[in-house]
Amino acid sequence: GLFIVLAVPLMRRKVPRNSWYGLRIPDTLEDDRVWFEANARLGRETLWSGLAIVVAASVAAFALGDDEELPVLVASGLLASPRSWDPGGFRSADV
Image 1: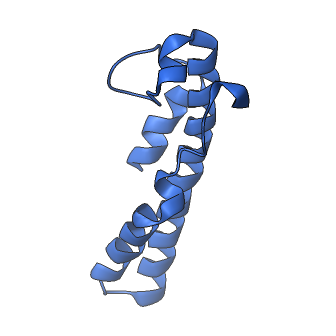
Image 2 (image 1 turned 90 degrees about the horizontal axis):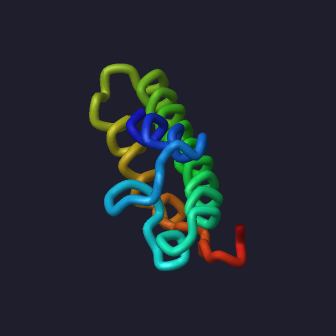
């Protein structure tokens, strides 16, 4: 759920350049256009990741009933997957 909440302002281009929230690489920190394009893309990726985690954990919880640990393990596994943390090779040439 937290990924979804954090993704929406990025997708909507509501987060100005700053030092703590968003994709902070040299290209994005130098140019507002690149900042907003890259973070809108990151927001979309983050939203889909958040939705996948919620759905997978919900399905695991429903399918396994009282086993409280498995949904947490499923969500943790999705978070630990390489795709969850890959910024997709963001560069100014991509936007």
